[in-house]
Length: 321
Image 1 (cartoon, rainbow, N blue to C red):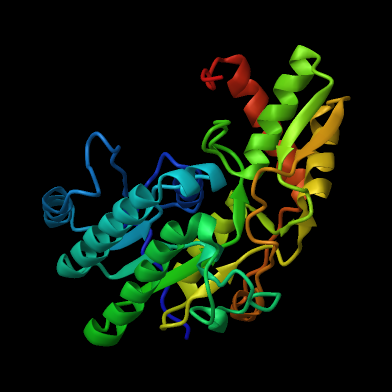
Image 2 (cartoon, rainbow, N blue to C red; image 1 turned 90 degrees about the horizontal axis):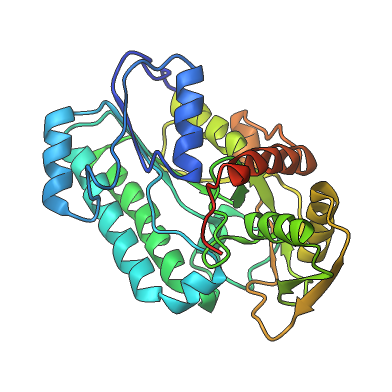
């Protein structure tokens, strides 16, 4: 359903503006002429605290809200701290979505994740496969929280006639990613591992799992573009997969990152570590039909990300080892 585009002079609040997705959204909004972008650091506004969030919305009354704030992490972090992942994400979602409604925000966009889908569902994954089977155990807590946020938006639309949109991105990467070796996702972890191995002259790099799982990756700047497109052009109660529509094995990904970083050593796959979901490719027919398509190919996106990482690395931005 078509609608009027957002008013670039009204307030728009981006929750999670310092993260991978939030920072890309702020860059995109600035480039598109938004003049009243509202942001708060975690120190300024703790989104897990209901009273703080309610007070913020009552004071600022943003016309538009983008909920990109979340507790995120890779397989290791999700597997070892599941209580934190479900509790904190549910708190953030409930506080922000309800406060947006109570302060009469005109439109809200909720960022979910493709991990909401069943572990063994048919590929490529269509939106209607949600809740059709068992979730992947290694990130079940995070997935359940994201499903709750998606459903909360849909039910608020149903009961209160709000104009909330939910998007489910595939694996994201890009500028401002998390490159921690303890909590990062696979692509930024590979970039850092290969870069440091090259600098130290190490003969091999160890990679979690067998290398056989298939993954889909989307540059975060493409995601930001898709989010603004939907905010400008869509209102309704469907949610959208956002992805590239292409997949690559972890082995092929490692070889690509190895080539881009210039590492000359060997790959060693640690099969004692979990693989996670064996395959996860999203069907992006719905967003394509709505008029948006991805623009940044994987190799170009990784090269841009690696260039940014190298500059930050030399400045000492990634100090933990």
